[in-house]
Image 1 (cartoon, rainbow, N blue to C red):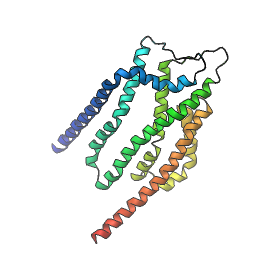
Image 2: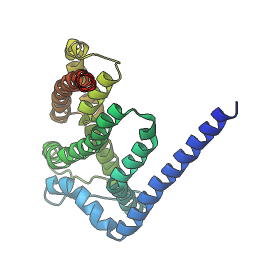
Image 3: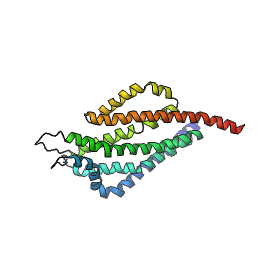
Image 4: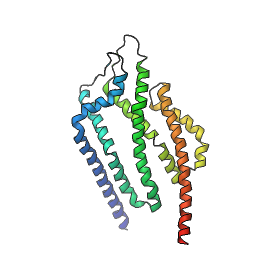
Length: 251
């Protein structure tokens, strides 16, 4: 009767320790780069600043905005730098409960999820931001000075990074759904039309109210869904062939 509670408590203790390690890693990275907080924000604001018309600039309407916004950006960057270590702590916590064949698939998926999340953010920064900001700012009426608030700009950037980061992880999500048996590859193909419509709905929700930015989120989401189907089929075929090869080895 006491084994179950003790095991549960030991898991909670381990979870607490790994969360603390992850938090300490983020704090250490933050303290290491906080001196460059202004430069980090300037780099983040570069796509907007480059698209502003002549004489346009960004403003801080909040009393502490000029200080707090760069700190928030620096904290976000610290988390992203520490993200591989944070994901490792998650992996180290769940790995003991996985079978050997599950570990072979889970570890590449964890690595791929980190890579794809960064890829989505990179795509948003270098492709989406310059295109969308340039498109929007060109419609500023004559005599209107474009002055974007830095706090609102940060909120927009964070939501866009999150949207594209999660979008680029769609192949991993699809593979996991197939691996755990929630959905089959044939079912994924069957619901393709609904996914395409849903991709444009997601684009309309998480992007500015213009067709260009919605299109730039919806199309990659759809294409990555198709990539997930292809990779999921490969995983299924491999999972079926491995037991047969192991049986032949035993015989």
